[in-house]
Length: 372
Ligand SMILES: Nc1nc2c(ncn2[C@@H]2O[C@H](COP(=O)(O)OP(=O)(O)OP(=O)(O)O)[C@@H](O)[C@H]2O)c(=O)[nH]1
Ligand SMILES: [Zn+2]
Image (cartoon, rainbow, N blue to C red):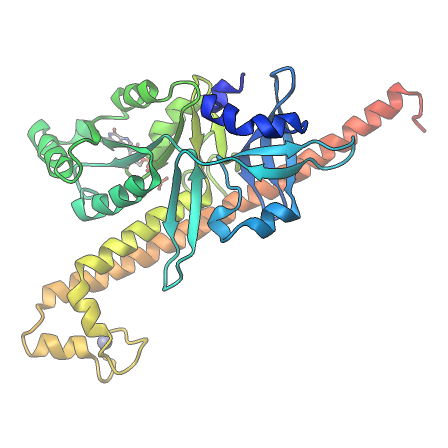
């Protein structure tokens, strides 16, 4: 593996030059925890090594907001320090793109999902997931990020061809330049498209609703040892594919994939925003309900019920509003469970790592004849 395989280029090289003069090394952040980062560091001889790095106080203080802080996918300048010291991030290099979302509520804070992302792939299907409104939402995020869009309308094998083409046409008008393909992960055509984009040095995010086939597609890329955490066991909360929670993964065939809990949140958020938008009129009515936690059932002073009774609002529309709200709630619960499973695995892996370190120290002592 070389720096170029990680996305290193001439622009970064130029920006990094003054740091190189100070003996710093370039590294790409692949993992973020509450206490430190995992980074792939480009060593002086060009080799790549994985290290844990911490943030310098200065970088922390200089950040105007959270979105300014180093995030997964960022290139940083690190100081390795003396042996035994934790390497320190001294600077974050400029971002070529940044896939993020604004946090809900009136806060203007931004949550970075992945930095230096080249392609954001949205997976959907021509059936129940087909939703131009939601796609518009994704497109807005991708446009703002600076990454290229790639849309895969999956499960083509299960729908008539003209139906798939009609779905494609409906999405294409939203962004005429966007690359949109009708594929079937089961028949292998989705994999072909993904591979054609995942050249060495290219970083991709994969987003889309639950059940559209993301795991199926991604697992085809991953090979055996790394499986996308898919289903979460309802009872134990553990991932069915017991995997590590690595966030930026180098694919066996070249290219990189970013997967983190934020990616799932972006799905949730997109779904919820789309829901609220498509029921803006009903939403507006809810603010007139007597109680702010009104369930719009038999609650007293419900403005929605009143609107139905007066014929202002169709009962069918209210029912789908209530059902969709439930749907979002269900998805949120699933996303939370997944995140818990992911975090549990991350913790476990940290423990395994620590034990490996102890093993190494023991071996070293043995080698030096210091053993017991
Ligand atoms: N007919 C058909 N089914 C597919 C295809 N791709 C995936 N599926 C099925 O769709 C279901 C959901 O696929 P997943 O890959 O788990 O979907 P996902 O997007 O990862 O879903 P989450 O993990 O919940 O986010 C599975 O039963 C797959 O076998 C396809 O191309 N054709
Ligand atoms: Zn109400």
